[in-house]
Length: 346
Image (cartoon, rainbow, N blue to C red; front, side, top):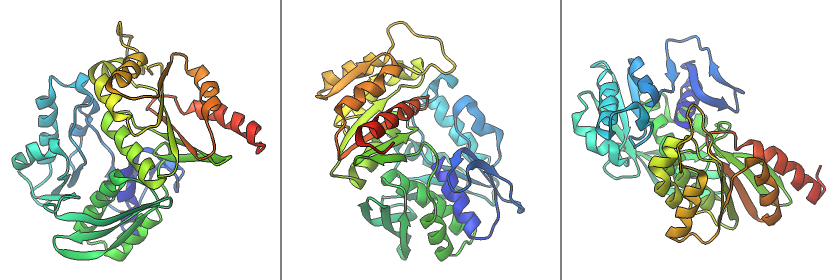
């Protein structure tokens, strides 16, 4: 979602006036879609329900290939083949832009039959980020195309994952001949997407953040962004797992993904489209995290009780992050009221 939004920002700043179809509400637009006047369409697709195979892109961007939405596939190889089919649907005059840092992409790279451009932190990538600096105002980095220094990028959004997202959008912009100063401006002015490290409020020096991450890799990226951007804060994470099947398949990976959180609350699973699976609850993740060595984990079955319990342990300088693709964000509404009452800002 963020990669699509950043690409839209770059093309818009480059006067290409694209139509945008995005899987989240872009803050600057206050919507997830925008009709442009040009022939350019920037659309977000993913592997769920094999929906990525319904489009024929001229430029295809693949950010990662990982074990997700496996309920739609026979196995991981089937998932990889779906991405390969997507990439090879690009016409001969198009381009496939991929993240070279991702192991899943590395494993299929030599099977892509179209022109490929890579991005990443790796020195082997075509578009790379160097001299990365982190701060409360986001992250900045030098952009290189092969061995040529293009300029420095300043983002308002934190984390290495957003550096990679920005590199993908830079690669698209360069392919479409957007001048680099326009790329810089488009990225610098981008203020983010709802539920993607969305800072809801700072009350009593307690920072309240909401994030949509629902896969172990995404969670680790979110927490890394929090840790590098605000190193002095204690991180309190509230995680609502999404889907019984995903929890069953990845409970160990979820447990490991929260070791950058100082305190972890896990609550009930958001079922979405699924029926319960016997023995699969949020407590499976919580107990596994404890067994793996996390020293401050609590399971609270009822989501409605989480805000009260979290409020009891929050202190100034803390950062609370609600994490998940379900309705965990609702906890913030209750929590913000409590914090306003405590700190007299209501």
